[in-house]
Amino acid sequence: MTAVSGAIRFVLNGEAISLTDVPPDLTLLDWLRLERRLRGSKEGCAEGDCGACTVLVGRLMDDEIIYDSVTACIRFVGSLHGTHVVTIEHLRGENGNLHPVQQAMVDHHGSQCGFCTPGFVMSLYGLWMRNPEPSQSAIEKALQGNLCRCTGYAPIIRAAQAMSSYGLPQGDPLLAERIALKAQIKAIHDGSRVEIGEGENRIIVPASLDDFAAVYESNPEATIVAGSTDVGLWVTKFMRRIGPVIFIGHLQELKRIAENASEIRFYAGVSYSEAMPTLTAAFPAMAELWDRIAGEQVRNMGTIGGNIANGSPIGDTPPPFIALGAKLHLRRGEHRREIKLEDYFLAYGKQDRQPGEFVESVTIPLLPAGERFAVYKISKRREEDISALCGAFRVFINDAGVVGMARIAFGGMAATPKRAKAVEAALVGQPWTLESVEAAMAAFAADYQPISDMRASADYRLLSAQNLLKRFFLETTGQGQRLRREVA
Image (cartoon, rainbow, N blue to C red; front, side, top):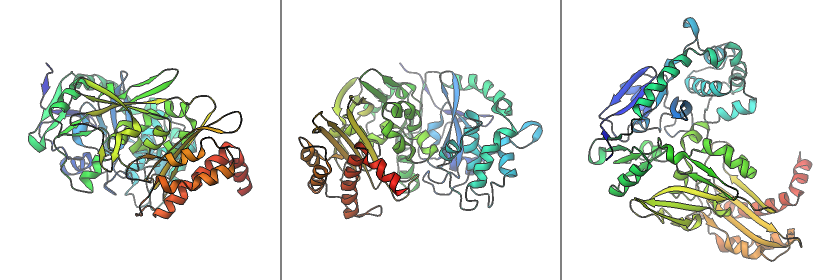
């Protein structure tokens, strides 16, 4: 029988925290500012977009504490069990001086009004710890989730480029502290399940994957929270009650990635950041899409399984995964079943998932030799924006230049992520030529009847989908690169 503990335990900066009365919807930002009076973290957007609330959360991975930048406005306190939370107030340099990242920001005039500055410093601190001499590209990527209305970013980037000249991670006064913290964090992970509260105020932190399966089977009405990048907005924007809640972001068994010669299996708790090296090595065409999914903080929190399980019609992962022929692995208690990912999405807000059943993993077949694949995202902003539509294309062209297979899937074009089967049928058996592609473009109207909303009109979505097919053709035949060179 699994032992049960009655407290959420973690370390805040240098202080051990034990909480026995925590509402399921209490955000880390509210707790820091209102309960702890740590007000360096600011609330700007309350939806994980602006980065003003950025803190670091350290978690035990392979006997080391790994720190991720996260947005405290949508991170729940109940998810912090067994972690180390570091806020701007804890940073310091040697002999009472500013931390190297802070001093670099001062000397390079990286702050003006100051509202966003703590978030920038914490994002750069996370970058500095893992890469003290980053390239400009790495700096820009680390700061995707931090917005500033004053400085124009150039001074902040100069500060980031210079921060290693003020000190290296080996000399960080917090390094020795983190070494000592490792034993403290390990002791929290004692194999116990955490349960606090009752009814809608109940929080459950399972001890293991098997424990989670048993708990959820017995409590199918509970909300599962992994990264909270979606559920956080249910609370901060829609004021929804989410309890009882089962927090699963800590489960190492759900953070596995398994590879063999024919496929990759991502377990549901793998974050976007954790998935990126493996995914983009196998599918280089995914790299640009992955860099455009939200900002660094949200990529550190959001999970592969959560993006699929929520069933959003504009989720970024289902279209390419469907085009690649992904399989979904579902679990209820000890019972497991496998379905095609495309069959999981039944209707808007409805998925093929029974009460007490959850997404355990997704398996993606590797691309067979000779097949061509691409994925494109259309959004109002290039960086850190939700898709207006996302299209994935996969074809096989035989030696005669004829389309032998086509799989096309879109998000944002229907009530669910959906294949363009009429377009596929119009392409298969035809020569891979511009004439065939232009003829097939008309079939999009048979596959999709998109809506008009704040992100795009129905006409724009339909035309964009057609043009993306043409773009895919031009790029697979080399004409796309020629056209880009001519435009440049």
